[in-house]
Length: 237
Image 1 (cartoon, rainbow, N blue to C red):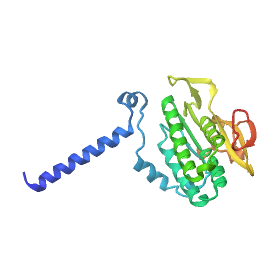
Image 2 (image 1 turned 120 degrees about the horizontal axis):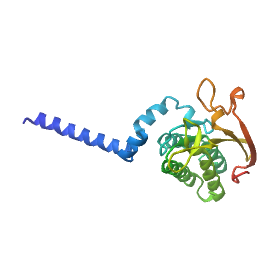
Image 3 (image 1 turned 90 degrees about the vertical axis):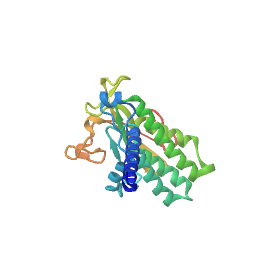
Image 4 (image 1 turned 90 degrees about the horizontal axis):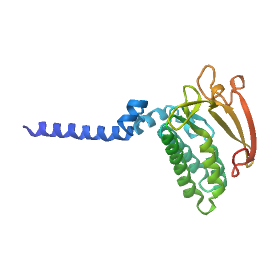
């Protein structure tokens, strides 16, 4: 066998090994692939798609919905871009960074039918947010802000079925009496944050298939509204 042929074979083996490792990161088990068709999007493809809307990924209040979020590959990548932009703008303005980072984490929405994916997605998003928070705000970090971030994630990342728009039980079965409900988070003055709850079933824009918080003609079924300090977010307040 010639040296060139050996090198070619070696390259093919390396390529195969790389592809196998990449696929291993994209699935949790063959059983889940067969049962749910669960295959996570690879980092390279995630970033390529986000580059198409790169400007929106920099705005802290630009909302994104991932209807089959898995363990959060898209949402984590979006949050990292948003936080990097906030670090650039507010590196020495700790309170502004804290407030805008809460807005950023409140802009991300996800649905997945698998409970462990939902829990992992929330955990990953919080870690990305908290690592950046500690790096920027250091001694000015607040446990209250952390609890607000956790509460937002509990509202925004939902265990449900994005096709039927209902929540699901631990086995992934629909709960028709529990429709998916999302919260709109927005700063309204100074440190005051407004939360408005809507059913997901009526939140989708009629024509574009996007979350319609800002479209009055397709705003969705409004449930309730709460206003409080952004560091004091909690159920019903």
